[in-house]
Length: 278
Image (tube, rainbow, N blue to C red; front, side, top):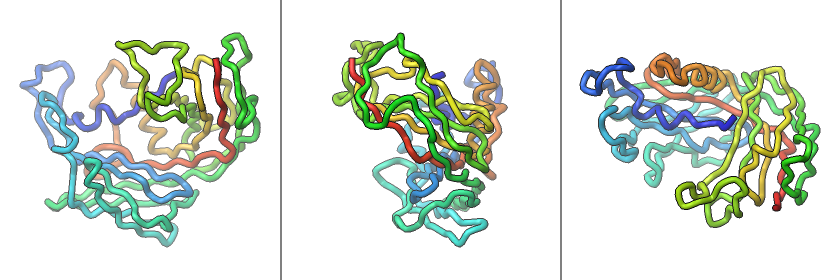
């Protein structure tokens, strides 16, 4: 299945009712957190915005939260990092200390205090390290696309403290001029996208997957990785999948005092990169 990010609905998702006219919605301004920790790296992004009114155009810059005090603190490890606001990206806070590295198996708490005195917090535990142990594709190889070829098989060692595995296929040609000709679709109405990626959630115990060629959409440099995802994001994905066509207001978040998701992931060692040709 093609994975669709949760970010598209969070900023405007603060109203009551699902089948009433927009005039009956009650706007409830809340803080939305979108933050991820990745094992072995410094903190790249914690995004803070306010919810918008459902009947008005949403402008990220207008609803971005600035001048907040944002910290990530270790619960079972000596760690504290004060994140800095990035004026170039609305709502983004990030670490400026490359030595503040997130460690696997450790628990971290996010603490946010806005300029008007509102506070939110969240906790996540980072999954353990693990590795890809087998791939039917050879790393750094040139591979000819073939719909009749067998599926591609990948296996990895188990992680710990995770909720699911997320095998990921992505194009390394990161913007349209670099993405080579599509063998599926590339028209004026459906132009080449800025980014290409597929993510497939698996059961917690499953340490392998078979991916057919249909998951690859464009020629060029393609990367296969596996991520161990924490319980927070796993729970969110499960809820989101269950609400399609239903009541989105039933979503539960792991943010105390606000909406959104604060989660962690660990990337498997031994990712596979191929050059896919016609």
